[in-house]
Image 1: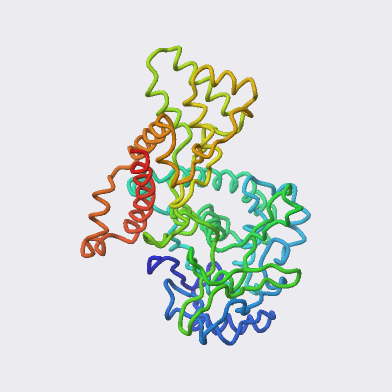
Image 2: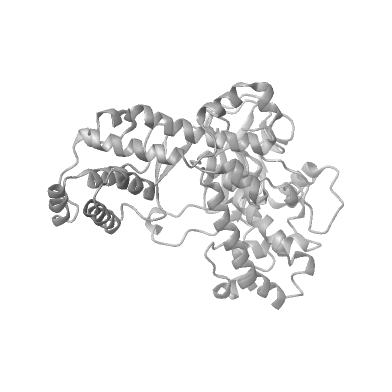
Length: 451
């Protein structure tokens, strides 16, 4: 993780310039008032952490030990904020694609409320104007540094959705309740910053197994839990119970070592998009590279000569769409040690490489024919044993994907290998380089396996 991964500075209430001289002491005092119990074995600190504030072990900690417990009353959500009743009554009018509007309105209100009970908690937030998400980079820089990674496209969607949500739902609501929202919080820029903050710092309680069909739970702000930095190889985990949320050690943590949570299995492109930092290669064992589904179709079309062959290929693609194996905006996701979309990619390679007669039979059986054979298993180690036609189509798809990047692997290896040059890169250039390099290493591994 880069040393500036999560720069935290005093945020304070919006419009307030007086920073608490010791925000940690104020926060710890607030924790005692709200019943948030920190183990005497841990400390909130800027010293010994990878970035900004973090949590460090004062004494050695064993797996299973409780690090802290957050009572549900101390969580900041649409239900616990001081306008919770209003947000609940207006729930229908506040529905949006993201599902985040009620929490964001709660934050907009509490940040400017002079006596918000969460003020000591806000004092440990990062300075909103210094968030490093790519949505705050100039568009030219974002496109130049992250071309081919999938991040610029994800950011463009975010920005369009944020703008639409703000002007169609959030601003009208604030204008209807001017006594609750001062003019200084009625700003698209502040709203965008809070969306980024919720992206990076909120938690979403998982649904119970029997609730799988329900809408996901709304995001929550969890004081103390959001101080922990992220690592794929984390040593703590958040557990949910009816009255408390508990952070529990999952590995031995020696004295003086930082305590890391996990934000989930996040590839570097997801980390930079949602959190504004990456884990340098090769630390992120959850890193992935995407091959767009339409790229595989394009690679297959390259091999067609006559119009009839092209039409047959489109017929196969339409059938794969009907089976819900592919889609115009979908991607096959390749990890460092496994293919996360194994079934979808296997079926796609199989159908696109079938003879006309095999395809007719497969179609007549509505995709259920031709039982999966072990030699067709699309595990990383099995790729060299695949049929030659499958390997070729996969290889062509990887080569097309690599063309989307502005730079090649060799030039990036040279940058990473030259410490003097690397340290002169800007922080954004370093982060983007790590994203591109991790993806290309996975794609080049596929090239080797399909050669």
